[in-house]
Length: 354
Ligand SMILES: NC(=O)c1ccc[n+]([C@@H]2O[C@H](COP(=O)([O-])OP(=O)(O)OC[C@H]3O[C@@H](n4cnc5c(N)ncnc54)[C@H](O)[C@@H]3O)[C@@H](O)[C@H]2O)c1
Image (cartoon, rainbow, N blue to C red; front, side, top):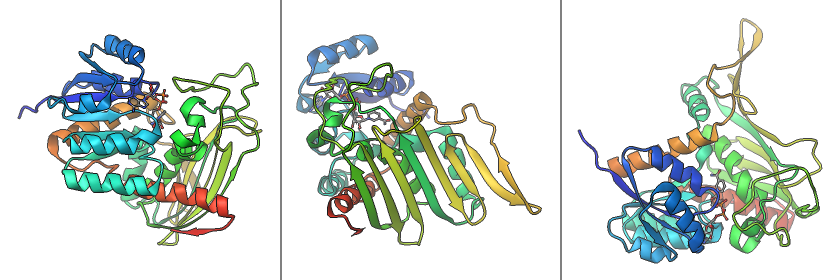
């Protein structure tokens, strides 16, 4: 059976848009129709690079184009709710970058717009789409780890505040917790079977600033990098409790006096354990012996471009079939409850019931 080509518009032509554009470009079932950015020059450059015919600086004009069926939203976090809701109302399917938005209230409004529109919304929890993540999920779903009752995640940058809007709480919603914590918290939560979060206890620290003085180390930067402005936390940690008794411990930083950058994602069940980062491995027991079992895969940790390709392929296939994505709006909403609960807990200095 032949399937139709999905006509795509990309809103936001900054750093991460390349991952979307490259993945769409490889997809034979896609036609990249339009691109939009407030910064016209940036949008024009991307249009030239990827052979895109239509360039907009106002996303409402892009959305008014009836030819476009689906959009990727790759803009600042403070625009995700506004643009996402407008896109759904204009009858477009939506792939929105993480985090879904900045607040629980915004997340509820997006969820209502999804329901009212009948269109699909996929949250860009890209780590779920990595081949190793899908492999570990298959093992967990088959019961290999038994009941997963504890998870531990860490994403420590010793120097890596991307600056620009990332460093502006008003536009980002927060610092490393909402920017990179969202990835590792989501991955653990997805692997644990998405249990209902019931309480969080968190701390955030504003101790080191963005350390723009440091030389000789490079890091990811927003398209409009500005070292002179920073209102977000340097680091955060949290304990999340779930209704089924499971718990998740996490710590993340944009900067910390740590010896090196570190990313760990670890899951512990009553029959076995698994680690996704820094290297994929299973831990089990057989014949009174503990075994570390290393699955043989192309990449020991996440392959970012491949994970984006899988995410985009999944989005396109859901647009064609009408199937629900594996990272639906409900998961984005639950994630906002956890993240905002952690910020609230840190501000009040006490545990928060969700
Ligand atoms: N999945 C991942 O691993 C990953 C990695 C980096 C960033 N992100 C997410 O992607 C999004 C963008 O991040 P980035 O690093 O590309 O930032 P960026 O600053 O490099 O690019 C954002 C672009 O959005 C444009 N923009 C902002 N508001 C707009 C509007 N109303 N209309 C049109 N254009 C608008 C800006 O001009 C800018 O060019 C953020 O939500 C971020 O959290 C995800």
